[in-house]
Amino acid sequence: MQASSTTDLPPRSSRRNWLATGLACALPPAWTRARSRALRFGLTPVFLDDRVRLLHLWARYLENRLGTPIEFVQFSAYNQVMDALRAGQLDFAWICGYPYVLHREELQLVSVPLWRGKPVYQSYLITDTSSAVASVEELRGRTFAYSDPLSNSGFLYVQHLLRNRQQDPSRYFSRSFFTYSHRHVVEAVAQGLAVAGAVDGYVWETLAEVLPDMTGNTRVLLRSPDFGFPPIVAPRGTAKPIVQRLAQALQDMAGHAEGQAVLRELRLDGFAAPQPGLFSSIAAMARAQKA
Image (cartoon, rainbow, N blue to C red):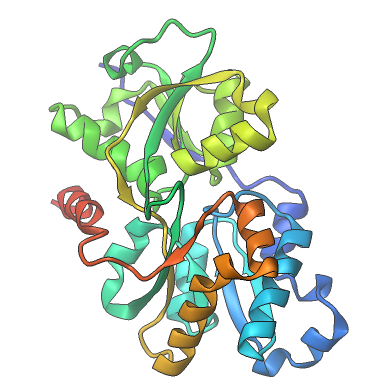
């Protein structure tokens, strides 16, 4: 069996990289003047795209509810937002369940999004619509696109799936690479850069609504079991009253016009308090990954 080489594709030079340095420059002057008091909210590749208007709407809603300036900061990779969280540079962040279970002793759960009425999502293995591939077994020796090494849906699940089938993930594909974006996984597969890829099902389904021409060139080969939806977290040391206020503001979004507008843009139904055991299946896969 041909050994695979896993390479990192650098994030694209675009508005996305501009936003990775922080959105303060795009925010109204009243917000930037109060930066020392602003709550800094990190976004990772869970976030669908770099939509400044949406972030303005979300920040305005949270500011009205909390009475505190909000500064969104978008990062290109999960390890970047985790480093910022652990360094005390962020007050909150929307991350993946995989880095959460890896660092749960340093973090506290704030809220979990509801998608299609539930706090869960799936990993999709996708391939090109013109591909004759009909099963995971037929991906052996092919090119595969992962999203991020700290992504559950875009990396960990596929690794676990192959190991459960007594396969070595590092040798299963002829070549694999990271795109550092679920959207870019879809693009890589649609453009023939990879025969298949692993993507967040919520992202794929939302792209199918807003950019059908992109997902129209791909099809879902396999859907994973349900996993806990990527959560919003805070560092363990963040004061409980602040955490509780944000959690309540997120849970109240579905009942307020401004919050509803943001939820429509995100294709979410709302936010809810985390359920016990929601991330247990991801934690089990993470333990197996270390073994």
